[in-house]
Length: 106
Image 1 (cartoon, rainbow, N blue to C red):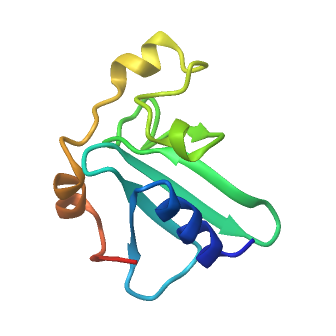
Image 2: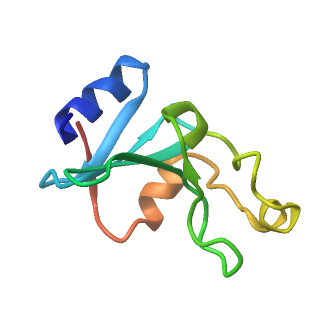
């Protein structure tokens, strides 16, 4: 597996993939509305997480087991307090405007 293989696998699911102009170890992916995060490294392999607006209670996302789960509101194991704190981005365009760096589509 490599970051390029991760990108190819996500695109094969019919999703758009974005990341920093210089490809590193992570990407964001979307169906246009729902947003997920994927990361690859040589030690841990692939990791996924959900994406939501930053909050004190649960950060910016929850660890997920798959591409599809990363697109969910929150994983089933999240507490009701965590779920209540989650505020999703309206769509990927809103997320891009709030991101700390410009993103390009792969």
